[in-house]
Length: 111
Image (cartoon, rainbow, N blue to C red; front, side):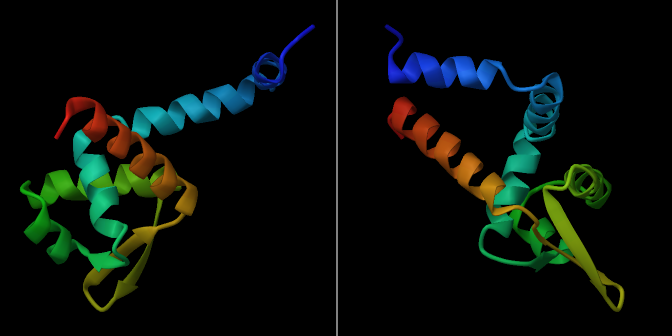
């Protein structure tokens, strides 16, 4: 007799390949520490690029490249206000996922 957890695992594995492909792409996009820092900063709410550059040590071109990758992946949304571009989290599930993983890593490392 199959347990509830093994039934759940089997149901997960029965999903169409495109579900796994999309999940793998999302994990790939979020695998860069810089992108996780950006997401962490945006958990506080919408911010412009200047704010992000104050909080995260990197160059403006590097920041723009990472923001564009997150935007194209649907992780971030953006809006223009004059010459400033403001970014925000487009999908709250991303915040929950990042927070859960980062909290677990922090606990496991004893920090």
